[in-house]
Length: 113
Length: 114
Image (cartoon, rainbow over all chains, first blue to last red; front, side, top):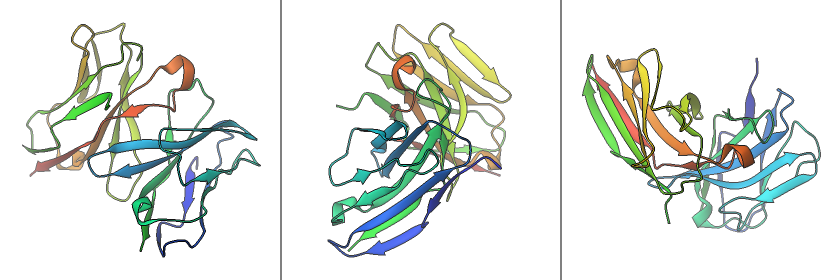
């Protein structure tokens, strides 16, 4: 089954404790992206990747890091989480940068205390 | 500056009724307008999309109406069903450059009462 898999689904952590949210897709997609979803603000793009070793900032990159060492994986790293990063996070992928259809994961609900 | 404004924030419709969600955009360079449907606990999924060269696109009970001059587009759900209860997001992008870099609306929570 074609899918985008995120882990964990739920995560509670404390301020300053480094964490990683994993994202993996099995569709051989070139393009991958991270979004955060906050009430009243919709989905905002954090980082995206056009292909292996090619990443770029989205609209709200501050406080986040990403890496794309393999085509299928695109982890989101919070080096020093803060309470304002409490949010619902989604990973998405598409065939390539020109493809119009985004496939989303099921989301990761992060709470930073 | 929010580039895509979506309304209403929430909508309650009786089964069999018509649900209408509206979006307005500002950037005239946008050329791809998708709607996503999100069920609780799931990620958004592409529902239907339109390009500005047509004024309407219909897929089953779902229709997008597009008004280029007014920079507005809307989603119409005919014969709404309880299974349509979800959050709907409109989006806009310059698809030639980066389809994933869509600008999303704030979302509309639709409840269809049986």
